Length: 353
Image (tube, rainbow, N blue to C red):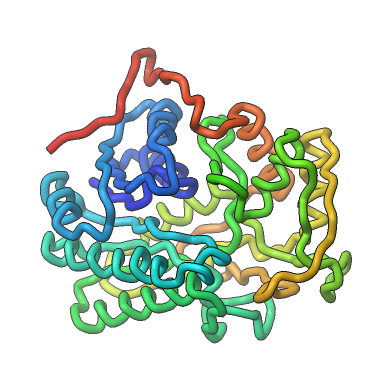
């Protein structure tokens, strides 16, 4: 079974590659490398002892995607490619609509032409907006408050309309909460360009001495310690959720599932957990709240257990420990990647036409 993985060289994509290869599936990964590094895929092959196919391509290029689907014998698609920074989406909304919405439309058009009608889509808990109740289940009203979240919401509606128009499609929509951590090998992890948008990479960069202190946006929320509470999920658990969704799509339909732990951790709890596993102090300062942030948000993962037989397995401490291992081994991310070995021999990225 050949799986096309869009955004395959990215943070989540590289971990999904590991899950797919370890499950015995074949992978063709595409990425435009605008916010990723193909060295991650060299490392994926080293971890798994198996090769994959890589194509430098953009999901907005329908003809290129169609040729890959046809030439590689793809049977299903996992769609991760897209821009994902909430703050940046407020500054560059049209760029997000073009990359995320138009890119998905062209991908789906290419899939239809190639008669590939199984799709797992990377959505986000941002589609819910400020929680009206907790925990947040899949029936929670949708109300995204930023362009990034709206792109995900629009794509979900597009995919439902596609199924309504052609009920041969098998579609899984996965609403992520807050992915963190890294593969336990320390070979693949989150490698942000510039200032990190997410909490844990920022904490790790402070711990290793690359940044002086962490800025906490808001310390006066109605939470036990005053800082915001989020549902952090280990990226390896998240990757396994994609495999579970793919296996579940045995019949036509649209399945929408939360991927979260069901537990909330505050910013200060994350800092304390990271200090414990790293043995380093994390200096921080508390500033004003950021516009659009909410006090508490965490998932109800019940439906994921019932529908997919999936549940998260890794604790906050393991998330922090795995990210710290990645940070120590890769202080400059993938930029200093050596030549790696696969099963005792040098292995470059596979390509074929």
